[in-house]
View 1 (tube, rainbow, N blue to C red):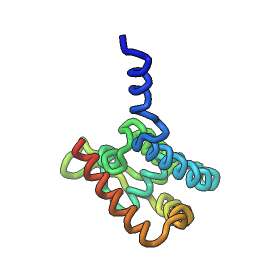
View 2: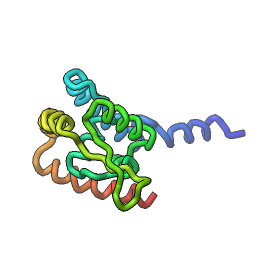
View 3: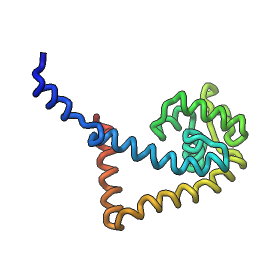
Length: 155
């Protein structure tokens, strides 16, 4: 059995409030919730639904699996979001002519209109968040995030 001193040392090794993955998660969740409050009221969208719309707006013709990979979201969450968006006629599914098992997704005209209205709101929230940093710090943050994303791929 570990001594009280050793237990204390082990507990201090992982102080959650200083643990980078936790802090990044908290930051991402706070920002996502802040933005989601605005578009949820106006458009009745969840965070996963908005992410699907955002990805398909830039990359039409992806499958649900592709969207899950692009967003790092759970496949089930993406599948549910896609199903709701299809029901709401914001996303359309088409069978891939090269592989009948694959469903290609694209925004409908209604989905494009929603994206066109939400994107400026999301960008305004991003600008507000980044206003806490100088231009130099923003450039540094971008570079550091890119490096951390690369390192995370190697984990």
